[in-house]
Length: 242
Ligand code: NDP
Ligand code: 8X3
Image (cartoon, rainbow, N blue to C red; front, side, top):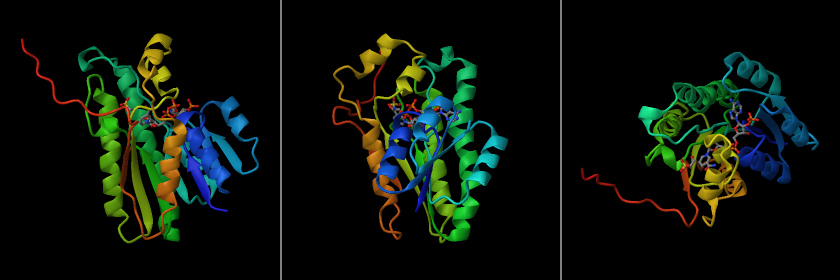
């Protein structure tokens, strides 16, 4: 039975991805910090779980060593904190985003790659964002972290040339999940206002894209997938007239 490992599997896209792969007959290794949510996922016979904070390099190494061979790694754990202009942001929030979205993703990728290369097969799916390509007010460090994910994904493709290991950057736009609860630090009115009448993506839409890229024939590498709700498009550049 093929194995998918999903970081940040306790919510949103990660949980939907675990559910999709399990439904398709795969085994899943679900990782995250909230143990009660991991326990709920572990109810299923084909789901193994482990508590993992991706910011802790030693923990990542231990957990990946213990999990054995995996066919697909979904680097999904990530977050945005705040939407303030850079000059007002908290440095602690910036540290947390860099440590999770960049360094955590690096630790997990580095732990998974040697086995994939040795087996000449495997797939690393990274959760980027449209914020990694298009800047918007307040995207500052979050957007830059996703820009890192995109460029790192491209670099991985270069380094993995000829190994048979595939890499995909998935770049969703507006999607309703706990993501905005975390970003707005529990401010329900901002959460509701963002999604109200917006018809955002659902976690299952992105899980579907992840399933699609990983089930293409072995000779096909889908490098980037940008996916937005139909209701979302990009505005033109602004001009401030002072
Ligand atoms: P959720 O908040 O619903 O899920 C985020 C997941 O990441 C949770 O399971 C959380 O689990 C986990 N996580 C956060 N920090 C850590 C950490 N230090 N170690 C391990 N796990 C962690 O958000 P989404 O499902 O929407 O987001 C998933 C990914 O998709 C993120 O990388 C996000 O940037 C990206 N994305 C989201 C979009 C959106 O609009 N929602 C759009 C584009 C991209 P726990 O707290 O239990 O550890
Ligand atoms: C999340 C999507 O547009 O809020 O990555 O940055 S967005």
